[in-house]
Length: 364
Image (cartoon, rainbow, N blue to C red; front, side, top):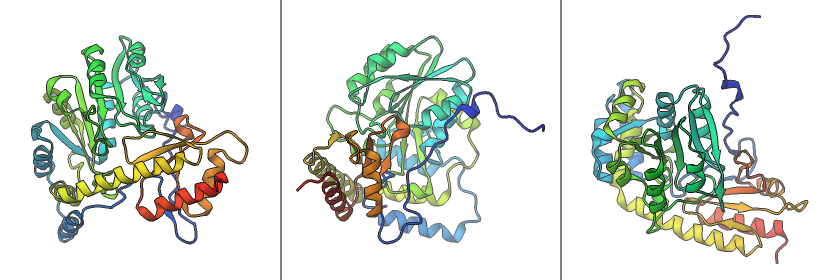
């Protein structure tokens, strides 16, 4: 039977599979699998979103001018060098659509975000994986993987799902030693959670170079995952091309109003940072006491490593926790079959997870 056939390579792509949501479960369920904001969105963002309900028949501003100006004020960047979109994921796909094609290569690291190979392979380009060191992107390994065909290097910093980060000095060394025609994409979705002095999200590097772009999202610390909004900050030539090919109204009005209000609510933003730092450290310490290894994290989640002992594996722990209404993220798709990712939650689920893991591990 004759029928439309996808481009070569499309059917080789492994579909992105989100974590469990708890759907179909009975009783109380705490979803700690999606790195969602523990404190939720700013009340001012909710109010701003609600005010838009009376005008849902009206198209949003296709240029996202007010949104870009708010981003410019918040990050001290030129709004003309910003493009907004349906989450940062849409914009990363757009970048791949523009710069990748058959015969090209794009590099990501072993445990990098699953969107990168999808965006690469959907354009007929070759996905190249650079090994990590201690679950952290290795600049030397990335540079070793570069060939004349390398068009993009994807770098999530901090990385999902490991929570590790590359220092500002190492990112600069990477950029300096990449070919000038290779675009460095810094995915800084979790930048708001990293307060380490040697970290930089990429803003200054974008300002100083002509071949670097930074992506950010409002889905994490701003708690606006449901309305899907993100942005990129890049050099003028890249922004010009992205604006030529993006959808005309790729940022919805209610989302932009909520995000503008959220950016202005610095008190809620700081409270979210403080909460995350406190409970990330607490979870890391308490779970480590149980004899489990936790990868040091600079994000709003931690990666817990389980033994291969029968009955104590990551899969066993996942099933044990799920029965108790505690939903974590299995990360076998990230080549981490013996680990679970735990999002930092509010106090109650955080304590319940530790209590459940103590029972699972048989600790006193």
